[in-house]
Length: 298
Image (cartoon, rainbow, N blue to C red; front, side):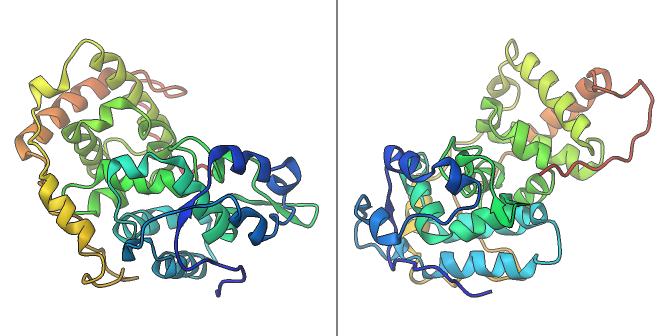
């Protein structure tokens, strides 16, 4: 699927105030975006670093739309998130800047936003929420995937990200919780998903609520300490964008070698979460009930 929009060579920033003016109700409901030149007049340029090139990012979203054309767009999240994180070499401070995500959604890949979140309506593809173009970090189309990869990766290992992004309730509920800033907690949730103890959307929501309530009185860092991240390794990974290979469609890339999560801490929290989940109230499910429901919500 080739790009049919005019994509700039370099990324920039579009302030929220400008994005809000562009995203009128008619645009959100499927009308074309204003001409690129009109939006570009409000773009703040970035520096000349090669990591701001749009080529690989545009190729990545084209591949995602083509690869998952015959499936539900939700399935693409687990494939795209680690490769998006690998391609966009950002610090957390840079990733917290909504104007960068505004630019990607409005100038680099607005067609992907419509493909991922749109619904056919009166002959147009209506996204329904302007926030998928420009919104909170855990809602915006690209920001949510980048942050999911950042919070759920285990150092350079992106496999936990694939597990997390294969369950929409992790993205819709667990992603925005402060407890996932504690890396052993995030990896313990992944362990429960991989073991099959937490399987459905109701399971995830029940565990997240129970863990969140318990976390208000129990300090995770005390019972499951984490190791400091290696910020020098992260800096080197960011600067190696030109020399590293581009993303591969069939194998996971390698993230920054900034330190794995301590195994013992993850196991300690996993064991505690298992006991907690046994008594956690799961909405709509009676004690002892087996439920094979899979959670993939749009």
